[in-house]
Every structure is written in C-alpha cells, then in structure tokens.
Length: 333
Length: 279
Image (cartoon, rainbow over all chains, first blue to last red; front, side, top):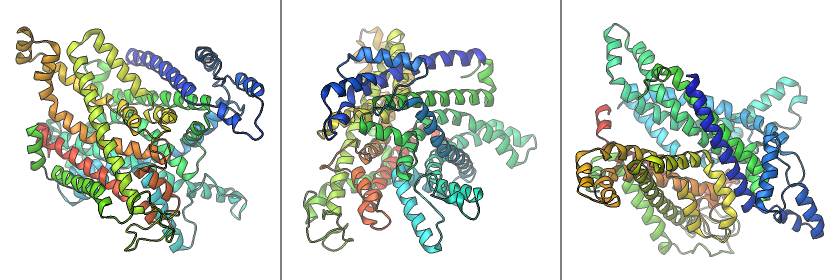
C-alpha cells in the first residue's frame, strides 16, 4: 500500500506543479491589473503606476518568463505574492480557506451520507413507491443548477420567516451584527452562526445528495443480485444484515472513486453558494479577483483547488484500499 | 445509429425526454414569432409588471418583456449546449481511439494531457479566459467549454478501443493492409456509436448548466445579449418580491436539463445489455 501511495503522490506532485504554472501563465496573460490604476481619478502618472506594478511583480511590460520565475521562486518559499493593493495573498488564502471549509464540510458530510442511504434504500425497494419518489426527486435536483437551487431555497425561507414571524433563516454572511452581545451571550452568537449556516449548507447538501443517490442506487442494484449476497442469506443471515454488511459495503467501494470525481464539482458549487449567500470564502474571492484582474489571487486559488482535487483523489485511493482488500495485495482488477 | 433510434422508442424515459426536448426547442424557436414583443423592445408603459395578457411572463425593471428575453436565452443555451456536446464528444472519440489504437508513447502523452486537464479546474480557467469573450463571440465560448468536457469520455473510448483492437475482424482488416484511419473509421467507430450518442446527450446538460453558470457571473454570454443565466442573475436577487423575473427562466432551464438527462439515461439503459439484468 505504501509504495502504491508513494507512486501516486509523485505523479500528483508533477501534475500540481504543471497545473499551478499553467494557471499563473493564463492569469498573467489574460488579466490586466494595470487597468485598476488607469481608472483612478485623478489618473496617476505612468511612471508611478509602472513602479508600483513592478514592485508587486504585476507589470505587463516585464517579460512573462521573468515574472513567472519571480512568482515561482516565491511560491517555493510558501509566498503567493501580493494582491494589486499590496496585501499578502498567503495569509488571506488561509483565512478564507477556513471560511470555505466551515461552509462545505457540513454540507458535504450531510449530502454524502443522506445520498448514499437514500440511494441504497431506493435500490432495495426497487420499482415500488419509495424508489419512484426518490428517483423522481433526484432527477429534479440533478437538473437544477446550484444557483437556481439557492434562489429557490431563499424564496422558501422568506415564506417561512414571514409565516412564523421569526427570523428562522438568515442568508447573508456568516454572522448577524451584535448577536453575541444579546441576552444569551456567546450561546446566542452560536445560534446565530447556525441560523446563517442552514440555507447554504442545505444548498450544498441537496446538490451532492442527488448525485450520490443516483450512483449509489445503480451500484446497489448490481450488488443485490450478486452471488455473495445470496450466499450470505443462505448461511443464515437476516435479509437486513446480508444487505447492509455484504451488499452496502461492496457497493460503497466504487463510490470512493466518484467522491474524487465530484470533489471538483463541490468546489465549484461552493463558488456559487458563497457568492449568493455572501460568505467571504475562496470562491467569492476568486470571482471578485477575476473581475479586478488580480493575477496572484487567481493563481493562488487555482493552485489551491488543484491541490484539493488531488488530495481528494488520494483520500479516495486510501478509502478504496481500506474497503477493498484486493487493492492492498495487488490483485485489483 | 439505427440502434439508438430503436432504443429511443423502447425506453419510456428516453421517449419522454426526447418529446420534452422537442417541445422546448419548438417553444424557443417558434415562440418569438407568436409573441408581440421582441427581446430588444422596451415597453415604457410597463415597468416590473407581473404576468398579464400583454406581457405573458411580465416585464423587467427597465420594461423589457420577460417572455421574449427568456426565449432568446433559451435559444442561446440550447444552441451552445448542442454545439458543445457534438464538439466535445467528437474530440473525445478522436483522442480516445487514436490513444487506444496507436498505443505506446502517443498513448502515454495523450492520457497525461487528459490527467492534466482533469486537474485544472475548468470553470476557473474559462472564467480567467473570459476577457477574450468580451465582444460576445459565442463561438469562442463553445470552443472553450468543449475543450474541458471531453476527458472522461476519452478515457472510456480508449479502454473500449484497446479491447476492440484485438478482435479477429479488426486484425483481419489490419493484415489486409487497411490504413489506421480507415480501420478506425470503418471498424472501430461503429462499435462506439451508441456509447458516443449517450455521452453526447449527457454532455448537452453539462454544457447548458456550465454556460448558464458562467453567464450568471457575467463570464459567458454578456449584455446586451442574453442567456438563461443572465436572466436568472438579473432577477434572482429580487426573486422573493418579483418571482416572475427569474422564475420562468429557472423553470425552463431545469426542464431543458431534465429532458436531456432523461434522454441520455434512458438511452444508456436501453443500449447497455448489462443494465437490463439488474432492473
């Protein structure tokens, strides 16, 4: 297992370096941070703009290879450069990573778990009412892009708030002003955070749920008719434990591969959710930076996303190895 | 291809998807002829009015007819989705077949390129490239979107080609002196046709969602032109108070994707001999 993981890691490292370099080169050629200075009133003299841009390594008069080498040397030291306003990118990257993580973690866990359970349940009840209902629901959910889902949930939440007369749901930012200074103190602050988390988390969970539900249902259907489940029944296990211990476990193995594939989609969904619900995470930063022409931020977030996608791939490899003994012994198909 | 058409009739889901898609196409392209308002027209007597006999889907803040705007957006989304699906599936077939058939270093380099493109977050790259689309050239958007949708299919095609390559009839064709392009086109491609048909239809839904998502952020189709994504972005923030601004566009977008998904999944079930056993 160790050798297998090491080979994977080496391959991933080369891919990350290439992906990060390509992202930087793309951003540096396509974006124009100079425009930010030229739009100012009064317009600063060209020499001043040039000096400032050169100081930040954003000057488009400097040859691309030279800028790339300066940037690359910085990244190797763990420094992703500065934004066009001169703030260090690395510190902000970490701060925003935690914001995004808070948002994505609960939604992913809830979405994966519920999706797998619903999919497995639908497969066991194939062709009956629960299966048809779950299949229809997952089709509709899969067809709704994240931004449509978010807007729908917001409208529904508005209705609930109006009907109950209480602000049950909040959908702007992470916290409300002054919540932790109320009568309940820190507890009120926590409650306020949770209320802000409900809608964005639900959006992410629903989007994930549909996907996992579809995959899990078809995996489970393949497994349910397999010989080893019949054997488990024949040796005297109840239907329930035969399906859960032998069926579900085997059907989960291919899901680990899908986890790696859908991780990129998850990051992308996070971009929409952050932008719509006003969370100041990585996704929002990326979109704003593209419109501002902030080369270093775009490159840093791209690099981070590449690392994250590959880490997800690694996690899925490890999970695969844990669930499927054949991978460890090298007999994998 | 006749297998695909027969499968269409056999599978209820595929039939429903095809009919729904045809209806949506008819609405998008015949609708503007029936509507009294064009998508560029402004009605200065009706600002942000709810749906009425005059304006079927209501009007926007600036008095534009939401029905006409939505249909115009549908046309864009449908055409871009179809073009992207055809282009990316074609590219996947080409790369996958060459990679699997030729093998060796060609194969290794091509698959490495596939890995690299899979690692690059496509949405981010398209968004970064968006300044190139500033003049509203939808064909550039089509090319960029297609460039990021073909990788997974290419891997599947490659795997299938490798197994087909050793079949007797392919070997026979090669030993009689048929050139590689001829073997690929006449003996390998027909076997992949049904897979590619399914993949193309599923790619339509991915492309439609990708296009509207990019347009939602202002990175795809840009004003003054309109797509479903821009209509939803403009109306989405006021969705609770003025639901008609984005509601119809969102509903139609979901219907388009639903129709294509039903069609693709139904085709896959009908064409895949192993899926019948479990169902």
